[in-house]
Image (cartoon, rainbow, N blue to C red; front, side):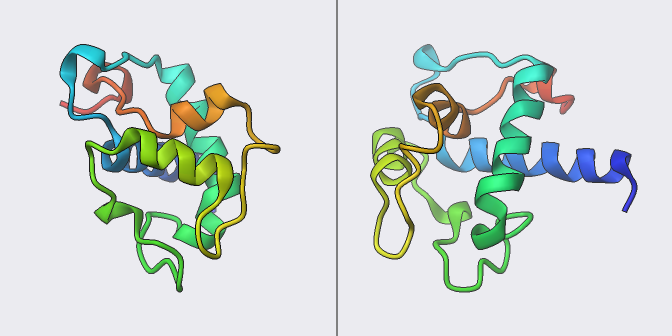
Length: 114
């Protein structure tokens, strides 16, 4: 697979994950740059996709992140940080700002969507 296609898949995954776990409060919503979105996509691809699926589809026993409630950001951060059921804790491997970035919804301009 070419680097360009892989990059597009990674960005798509990050946007989908961010959308699935974003806070419902628009006033608290943070705007992310294209660089931050790429970094979040890389984090997801390396750490999350092996269990949750490349596009959060067919997670093979892992929680389907597409169904995660949008308004439960604190629950998402807690689950990623401390682990949940069969998911190991990522708090020792990921920085708090990295975990937070996985749970935020990017702005449409930075992600390239309309």
